[in-house]
Length: 200
Image (cartoon, rainbow, N blue to C red):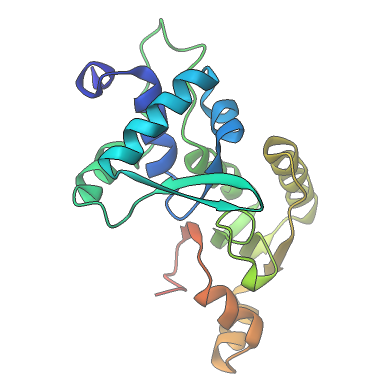
């Protein structure tokens, strides 16, 4: 139904990827891997989405990156349609369909313990100011965390720099205007979980 409405399966997969990962940038081969579609089809649809203004692109280290355009006039309604967890696919599509990356990650993060805040920054959002790629705040099982990070590194094909803080430590650091927490707060980020509105 959504595919018919929006014209192509690849386009719908792209919209789901971008809208479920606001502030996150992807390059073409990464996108192709994540949505499991042919590169020519992905390039064609990226070009269409760029022309309409749904996504933006720019180059870092000779690599072209794409991300959702949050200033696009229909950003909010499209976010409502594509930003949530993917609906259960029909039986024909079940084997190939995947939930959006961010939805997957937040589900896995919840299994690490009492996660109050989790966010991507750094390599994920192409903002290196914080010096990390993943911040987790809460009471975390260290063994499960190591496994999660190893799986994430394997999935993303890169080394992940991460930091873990307790809620009390995070709040204390905020109170004393700690440089690390202030930098993370000011950095471009994708918030996966924020149960206590620690960032608001």
